Amino acid sequence: MVNILLTTVAVVALVVCLLVLIFGALNLFVYANTTSPHGIKIYIACWVLLLPLMALACLLLGLYQCVQILRLILSASRRR
Image (cartoon, rainbow, N blue to C red; front, side, top):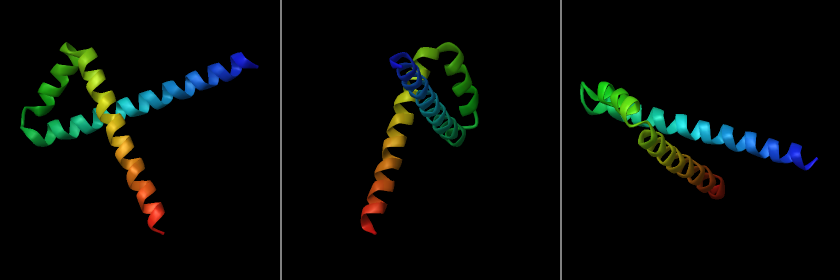
């Protein structure tokens, strides 16, 4: 029973981390697209050449954005 619970928690944590990573990567992609005409090329080059740093940056940015969205949702629900 404990193994099933630990496996479930690990899978849920992995899915949440992947979603946060994708959310941060999309956020950086949009920023790169609006910054300069060569922004997407630089963004892709950074993913190829600086994979660990880009993954960390996307995780941190995605986590920050998710926390900001949760704060916004909680503050909106408190106002009712």
